[in-house]
Amino acid sequence: MADNLAKSALTEILERAAPILGGRRENAPTVTSDWMAKLSDDTRIVDMNLPGTHDAATWDYSDARQAELVKYTGPIRAAAFFRCQDRSLIQSLNDGIRVFDLRLGYNPGNDTIGFYHGVAMLGPTTTLQDVLYGLYNWLILHPTETVLVSINHEEGSKTLYDQKFEETLFATLNNEIGKKFWLPVSGALGTLGAARGKLILLL
Image (cartoon, rainbow, N blue to C red):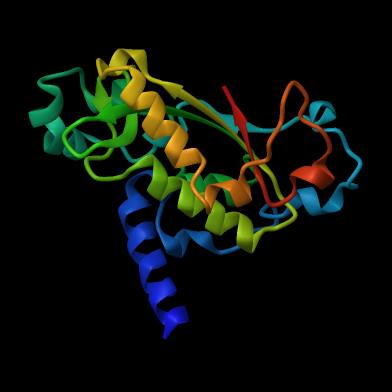
């Protein structure tokens, strides 16, 4: 029963995360899903050439999505001006991408942190926490890999960067599940062996 409840909860989380993370059907392994497995544990991360994506969360942003969200953003430029990617986070991970640039803003209406590119809100109900749970789940399935995540408040979102935002972000990254997946680093990235199965935060 407990396993069934856990699977049901994970399914619900991944469904909420899908506009940013991508769908579960995209999680089929590829030849590049586990490329770090071929490298020795003592490889220094600073010596690696890691592929990354700019504004990674924008892949699913469309005119239709923008129309759904105009009540929050007001009229803005066409969706094409905000979309920088065409592959979901899950697809990108399976393609071998290991560095993600995520831009955030505080949603005071539901007390969560969501995803933005400039003034464009990228998903009305997808939260940072949901997407991180999706990344944790991917790492469970691919324990030889590590993922570097750049997290920044998107100044152009016109959302507040204040104490509440910082507290919410800290709580999201430091909950009991998050503590198992974030590699604590201070001033040095260390080795791949220490980082396998972990996320590394880039600020």
